[in-house]
Figure 1 (cartoon, rainbow, N blue to C red):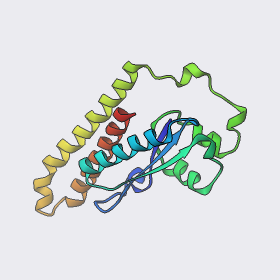
Figure 2: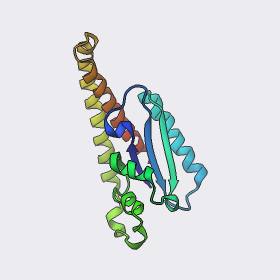
Figure 3: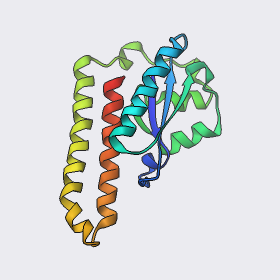
Length: 166
């Protein structure tokens, strides 16, 4: 499985009316209904936590062919989970000619837990700074900066939720 954050959230120009765009590329042969249920549950939990709509874009690996949408995702996207080079290789049409060694793509449980803890820690740091800046923002002096910090906290929290759910 591969997951990428893209759109305004990845470009760092998200606001309270923006949605959170996520690309999910699933291995062929997975139980579609069960996976879609987990993705929809993840989207719903993220929406409840951060307050923005979550728009999952779901493909099977065999469905990913060179296309403009993937060019855009590659240009702006942030890797959340999985092999970060897979989409680039696939979008340029030569994925079938090269396969990374299997051991290079395997995450240990400890490494995965460390990644999730780091993402959650970053979300908490952004939230703490945003909360500290809020009184100044209410006075009007730094409202855009506080808003940006809350957006970063939301993105980091969404990444932590996604990493934990996958």
